[in-house]
Length: 578
Image 1 (cartoon, rainbow, N blue to C red):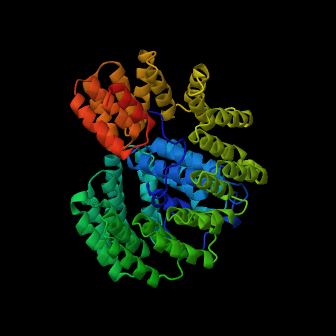
Image 2 (cartoon, one colour; image 1 turned 90 degrees about the horizontal axis):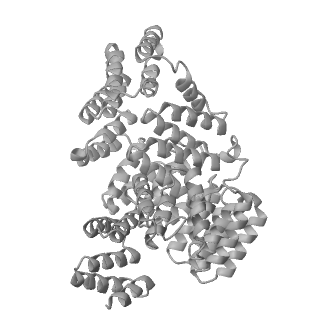
């Protein structure tokens, strides 16, 4: 099946804000007492974002998911793309961290250079570039000898040098060997907590989580108030001792009330366990102890979004606005989304309208237009987008993409196609515009053009899973060239193995091929990911074709109750006589 929306899903439903919070306002809220006013720093200030905030958050989420799954190249590529669009150094820093974590040194070098480019005054960025690129041809043994010599020659800086070991070794791909080097280098210095700390990192990276916890405990024994070691112990703890690790984290926070990061990690754990009352009490206590830490206030607002406390999140964000928080425009945008989620639509529209020309202006216009569209005011939505494009011409393309998407949703493919043709005049190789124009070309029966543009997307962006899915599904739906549809859908599935739309497309292909058992297996996987009328309609047809008309009828009745107005289900019911 093709995707239902070509852009961003609901930010509340998918908790995009939570996933993107560290990227949006700093990776570590607790260590940011000074405001991060990027409007006064580097090139990130002078160039507007070319991506909507909603798209930003969604892409950040995709990057984090890829990182958690070990897909470093995909994650880093996502963050580098975001950096180029937003010129935000925090995103480049996150890309660098992921690349170093997975020892993708070429990617790390690219990310670090981009980080330094967008934040040229950053000493950390400069040091990172230097560490990655200097002596990059050294063998592990040569690097070990170099670090050993530095440790011997600079006794007053041993702690600092030890803490650089994980990053310096990250260029080498063998975690076990890196752990051996780390242990040898630190052996003479086991009276220093930093030695145990880096040993713990090496152990955890080598998948010896128990060893990581043990070394973190050793570091804490030498330096009981060291927050980084407490967080390492927490993060290295395996799933089976997660509750015990959380108790340790809580105890550390109680003993060290200024350890805001540790306390924040504990609050996030409470929220993830749905212990919302405890999370709220702990958050209130943390805010009381750090009343001036605005980034911390923001992080807790995001946790409240995740726990469903929208009113509490709104209150904190309004406090940040009153305090003159540097990211005021972003706060207005996010507040608008919170208010919109609570169905206070006029207030939401006003908040979006208050966002001035700049980094978040186009995103606010996007949200305004979509809200007006939901209220049945397509003409007003289009006027908002046209006005925004005239006021901020650099955002014309992204605003045209929004307009085209709304027209598609309004079942006006011809008008959507016209808008996208204008977009492609401005940016002929814009993969999003090419993809969207292909999608609206199909109902216009411009099949050759659809295929041409989807294949161009594949050539420009070989990892664009939905392009392969769209063409493969279109061929399958029209029952044409199934031998060509199969490799297209297999490629899509290899790129996005958990995507419900792609799973459904593969199921539909198996149905067309008469492989009903394989079709049922795939469609059930799709249904486990997403409750959708089109997927259910396919399931009904697969069951019926496989000879199980009784189950097909039962599934159809249940689906009609859930989606009473869906035309696909209605058509299936008429065709099968249900």
